[in-house]
Length: 242
Image 1 (tube, rainbow, N blue to C red):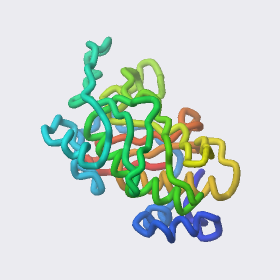
Image 2 (cartoon, rainbow, N blue to C red; image 1 turned 90 degrees about the horizontal axis):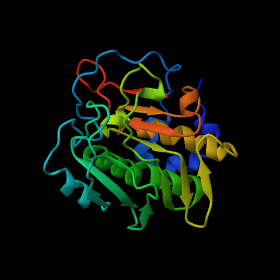
Image 3 (cartoon, one colour; image 1 turned 90 degrees about the vertical axis):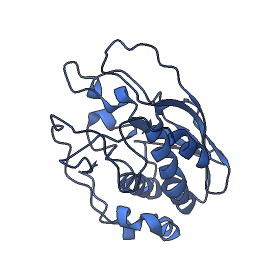
Image 4 (cartoon, one colour; image 1 turned 120 degrees about the vertical axis):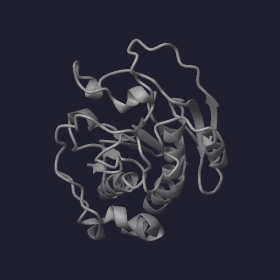
């Protein structure tokens, strides 16, 4: 079971001081292990930190994504094997902008819904990059994300619930490469600084996304962070983060 109640004793204390806007997420405890998913999610609704995130295509989303400094292109989707695998406004993202204006490469070129890309761009620029700078005194050069869209069931389990990846509403982080060459591999924390960075980054992600999972949540997320915009609760705004 993971908890974020001991951050004051870990090397990431300096990181949190350097990024006070995410302090409240790092100080919040993570909930117990993952329960069974809800049976009938409602329509995607807005996240408190991502008001642009909706389940329907919005004509101004590409403009918002462009304004955040992302390099992307509209994605042409092939007819899916499962007709439920529909992405409202698909984009393929090539890179994001860091707070200092440097490019953050996404070498896997993930294809996601535009609202997912816009939310991800906000999370990386406003939370992940400052936390990385405070933790390791390094800027982010690249993030490995996997393909983004994937028409499949949740956790690859046959007969299960459709994954948010199948709707372009999810994206993963497998590793982060910093300027200078250091690579942070999710699930292979080398020291207390990396463990604190892992916990704080995932807690911060919960402020932007509706779901944030990673090592310790379950066996399916032992080597990557998963974030998505699944609608949760009666108002669609509930959070599930581990």
